[in-house]
Length: 385
Image 1 (spheres, one colour):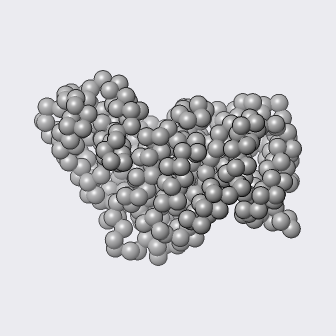
Image 2 (spheres, helix red, strand yellow; image 1 turned 180 degrees about the vertical axis):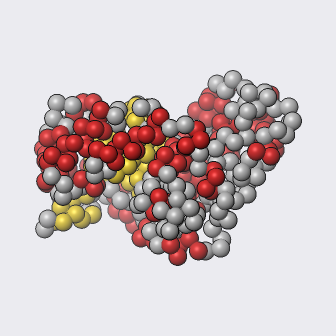
Image 3 (cartoon, helix red, strand yellow; image 1 turned 60 degrees about the horizontal axis):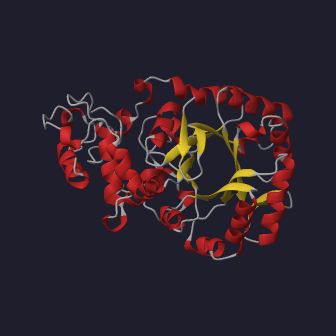
């Protein structure tokens, strides 16, 4: 298993994580088998937004004795009313649901206290200017939560939360289909094929790219939900690309985006866990998603680097994807104020844009028509080397 550092929180999380939603209504034995397989596979981050008592009890039992080996995302705002999950902004209901989380998971702390489902400007105002953020900050000061997170599906609102300075972790839906969609797309339309029939959907939405860049620059770790597009991307009939992707390709796409630390996969059986963690031993060819995206009119020849590394090898040993990534992050910086973390990471590269000999061997290999030499020249101007 590979692990990535969430810079603001200092957590080293597995690149493949476990989404717990689909364990609801499973038996204690089924839950224990999934959790055990995840732990044995090196998975150490679990998202547990579900408020139902039974699934909390069963997962709590499965984690008994190993609690300190894992990072738990517990959600503030996911409540249970009349036996059903419900989003709530009521401070007292949120407090009771969170305290129930601690009790049923048999823990006195939550690693990531996730402010739940903040998708609109109204959500942001209610949570960040009201009692919920104050409650989360109090819990963090007490050590009851170790990091503050936000879950969202909407780039504008998520970026506003990131820029508030309070957020350590963002839970966001990242996959090549959703990244096509304009920032104002309703989350419920993510699952509808007609959403992708708009002829203006061409390449990654600039607001999503800006959000990922902001997270990378600020050290906010992204944990990914809907990595597989709720299964749509695994079936050629439902995939907007007209071709099925593999689980490893979907995971690799998410992990290739700036800021992303862990792709969370919902599993109901040990076999599904093992299928997900095959990513960690997959070859570069097996993980390569460019052949699917470059054959789609929605992605073909967009001119934006997709970090697939088809441009390599470079005779000057430049990691072209890394140079381009830091260039994009620098260009996304507000008012040209390039974060020191971006400059520092760029400076650590063994070969940089100044080593480009403009031989052009890279550009014919790029499935997305990126003007790599132009990017190298721009990076040289931006970073000075």
